[in-house]
Length: 77
Image (cartoon, rainbow, N blue to C red; front, side):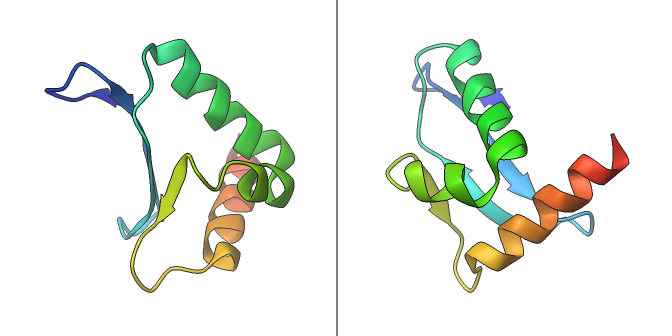
């Protein structure tokens, strides 16, 4: 999660190897961005489909790639 020069808060999801999987749209507060991250971690595919307008999959990335990364992230917690 980070703040960009436009004042909005963004996050991206990367695989453990560093490949970018998705990029969020901008949020007004870091709490809003954190809420979306939590939804992704807790709800996986359901949240991913509900948040399509808020998230941009990177080129060549499928929803399955994102779901696998989320599962790995949850397994390491």
